[in-house]
Length: 313
Image 1 (tube, rainbow, N blue to C red):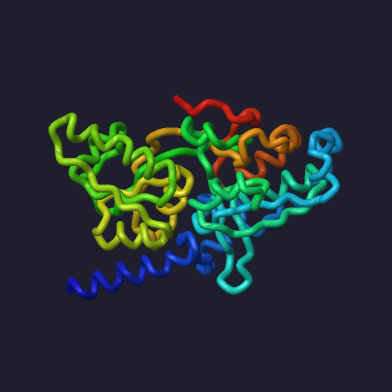
Image 2: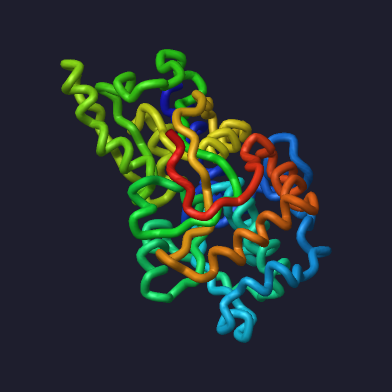
């Protein structure tokens, strides 16, 4: 009986891995046709009708305007942020994809998108390999030392457990994690937060929690399902979306810390004012709201785009 149960759980997890894995592509037809909880079909094109805003385009650096393209380094694999709709065609979809395409249209530019591992994108901005980075990058005090951001949504940090785990309650303080194995993404703000705050357990006279970082979100989900990880720390929107998929077998515990999310640029990039103007144009003309509603993340709306705002307290 136990072997059969384990096999069923593994099969359920495997069915979801193509959708959630950082380096894989979504092929589950249910996910491909309806990507947010209650949102419209993922195939809805809310960007195609956009035209160039001359006012926003005028803010572009001359060399970019002449080139007519923007080089984006983008991390894929975690819906609803950015993922592949199908295994073969690898058609990109998600919040980051729609905002990237929308901003480029407003600025009269063509997107040159290159998929890259999450942890490699920010370092590649300074070298000029990419003009802009996307990967649901949260604005943190540490990142602001070397990176500029143009914000477009508000997301942040949250936790999830297996659906049948009722022992772990919503996390409001990291001391609640003491003695647990916490899984998270490699190179993320979650990993940094967890590693920087390990002292909370020893200070409280408790056993420290163990941090296990995964390069692929599919591997993280498998670790949670198989009991190698007690609790998962990731994006609020990502964990909510994951929990809404029956095959994941997970339960979203709630929000821990909100963060602005933005387009990442090398420090001092002259692109920032143009990108900010483009996002604000999308907010003004209603495209912004349509993108959020499409992916079921209306709670992530911001009132206006900012350049490198301070981290949320």
